[in-house]
Image (spheres, rainbow, N blue to C red):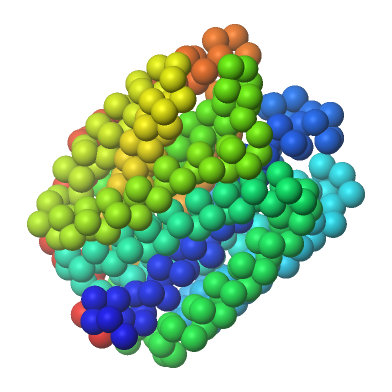
Length: 393
């Protein structure tokens, strides 16, 4: 095994893939749903919004549900179980039933996400937390791209139902990979003996409240960008079909290179500096998407998505490093804010889309990108250490 990517780190990369493979899978086929079920773009976007809403509702309870179980078991179980609602979506008889199973997926995803990030915070310490978190985020990049790309491609050639069957098969394979690579047993962390009151106060501290707000802004901008860019590119003069829209998500793969490199830089940079770079990339990318030529718009989407994943890595690392007494709880609240932002990002820009089209959506997206940086500058402070003991990975 390559000494730079031992088995636990590869397993966490796969956990990121599993968490995001299904989350945004419908983003590139919203016009297909709109046509088949006679929906408006806003109604079709609920196939994303209902999933992210379920994540936001479930996330605060994750620490209570998973605290009594070994983290490895929870991670493997959730990764495998995510295949079931994907199969049920393929058999849905109407859009309401489809939304039901998309909601079910959203209930499972935060359990896998929060448990994985808490596992990182417990297994590694110090600057290594940022590095390993960046590897996990790189997995979410590949999963997010893979779900959109596979769904668009299979929908174009076979149909959207067949696309979800393929996603279910891929989810099972990834879950088996996590089972094989993630070492048995807990990270071996002796939990600090702290009172509930101290842990509760920490969850409401200024740095963590700012982190929750950053997460809200980050996913709002990401979901809004790629949901309404897909609608924009599906119209004249672009008129891209599902397969072409799925290919657009290749821009995510740039983050596979950038995010791990940034994770290594993050070992010596404060997270707020990394977030500043991320927000700068996001705003520059948003401005580029206003230019008409398709290559420039794609370049803008690439910059914007890379900025989002950098911001996500910085915010995840900051949250796990700041929360000393209840990492899973802090990650749960972060995820709740994060995915509530994603849920609103799927539907709120529709109000601007109807009146001002794509430029109106971009203006709203940039406001949230800048808002993330303002929140971090208001609340974040340098964190020394990651709050956990060294790991063997």
